[in-house]
Length: 173
Image 1: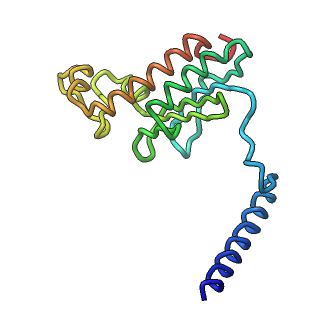
Image 2 (image 1 turned 90 degrees about the vertical axis):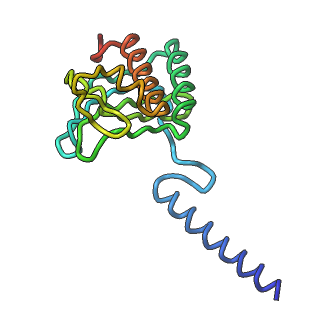
């Protein structure tokens, strides 16, 4: 009886392996080759006005070989605070800023609405959403907000500031 279970299990594993291999083959990979990620490092900052209206690219660069140290440093910083390489911080059908960069075979994709909505001086993007300040300063509000959320915002802002400092705000700056 035990042999029948083992044989069935092996058969199921073989079928699963064949299915996975054929799916990978359909997208250009064999069963031993993972899907390809871009090889060259790149940086992109995009303002997305809404999912239905499109995007405005603020920055897109492919760093030279001697510039990859900055990307590697920011890559490590991002993965310390966003272990899966992604942060999604915006409400439904809202505008947001997206920072994407690729280095060391890892892609970072961070999205937040706070850089766009906080252009209005009386609004803060807190851990609970967009909130009117009603006479309070943004700094005072954030001092009492969820510390983990505030830390993630600060890392997002630091990464964006360092990328803009190095590469400018427009391609070729």
